[in-house]
Image 1: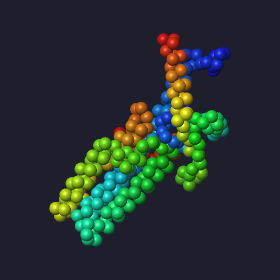
Image 2: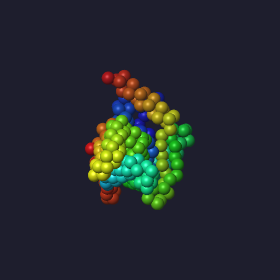
Image 3: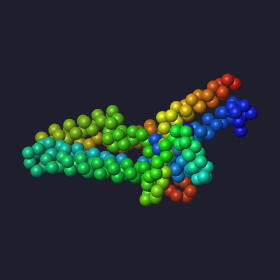
Image 4: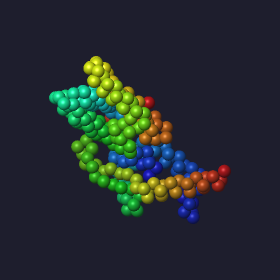
Length: 79
Length: 172
């Protein structure tokens, strides 16, 4: 999810290459995020091929911010 | 990786944050402009400004048809260049079209207005050589907008993945 905050929308293959995961792993994660409303997934065309474009929803960005804040509190509690 | 109560340890949390940020930065740094993007947008803006100026200076004559023609040319070039950007990067930046192509960024808008004003003045003064030379600098707004929108560091570099070379221009 953090990776998606760098852009408004990213193509499936671009995200896969950036995260260096397999198609099936990314697909499962995207499906899970879409199921809880944290991400949007839509079909599109790139270079004449059908592809999938993924973006974060407002709820997803909020949830990510909350999660990052919690992790930082956890780290700060040790320092 | 998580501790028994479901929460990560501070070390795990730090590693998770660092890895997430590294992925984000990697994607951001991979965003590049298509080749000759600046030149194409700059040329389209020049044509649009020149045709607008000529059209306004001869609004009752045949040159008035240059006004919409210039806009059509600009829109066509803009659509093509934005499609090239999206195809090259496999990603889209919010506000890219409006800031870079539409010129809604303050500096871009200001330079466009000044250039258009100068061109219109030149057209009415029949200083035709000036009409074509009055154009805003197209290079730095495009690069600045991509740099600003693509990540915290905003630096771009040529990206090579899986042996396939992506043609792009750095945004700095």
